[in-house]
Length: 87
Image (cartoon, rainbow, N blue to C red; front, side, top):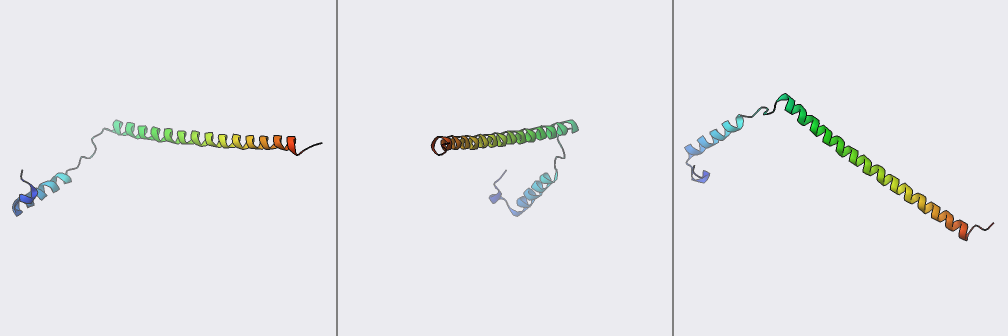
């Protein structure tokens, strides 16, 4: 096979025709119907796993922020009773 720059016009035309023919012959579906279904289900399972992880992280962060806010409020209330409120 010669380099494309060294081809004469006839060889270049044949080379382009060969490439066009090869690209025109597509593989329709190399997998069986069961394999396609398995791949679809595996992808769906992976998407569900990712969504579950996101939900767990979101709920954990929400719980941590709520606990932090309650701790700050409790500390503020404790400070208020110790320094400000004198019955």
